[in-house]
Length: 271
Image 1 (cartoon, rainbow, N blue to C red):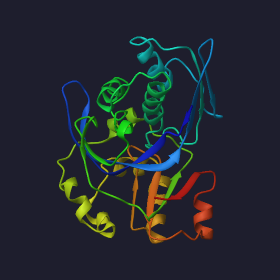
Image 2: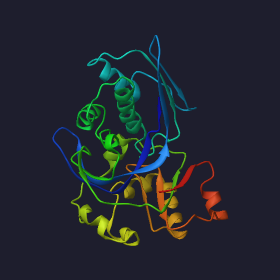
Image 3: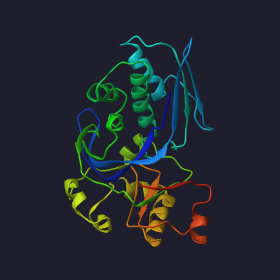
């Protein structure tokens, strides 16, 4: 059985506070996008894991392995051979690892006939990471708390073109949060669906951007380039380092753009 864990982008990201336990509270919109990994599991006589990526090895701390072991502790699951082919870049703010974990739970649920509900799968996913439960239902939500409390939002970007560029730098979540200063949100994300996308630039903010752009100027340069090329909206996703641009039509790649994105991960697709 094979599935295709998809990435997400953040539409706005407010870091609103810091809790006594050290975790930060946020407000953001998670939106699923069709940049996907491939995850396959087949019945076997013994458990095995493998991954196709030049920069990633399956280890015990990999979220796919953790997802398998979590269900193995609770249910009778036969051994599986699990294969992961990575396409979503790591250290990008696109939720690739969380998506892989959530889809692993869903895949095992189907393959092993566990008949777990979405609510049950979300509870297990929450043990793996704050944003993992989002990928169980995989629909646009406003995420609050530590990114683990979801409120559905009626928002569709169907028909728009999405471009994602990740420069050859990675930003760890820990590093990003060490730089940011919490601020009160000045825009209600519930209003996002009522506004034209062209207005998002004036009201949405990603609180990580000023700090990350200062440390890694190329990330800010990519965002600026998207707007120069006519993006309806552009932003860094999550804590970076990937930047996305939303366009009404396919982008014409200019010489300046080619020079800027040299050695970058680049993906485009219709939403």
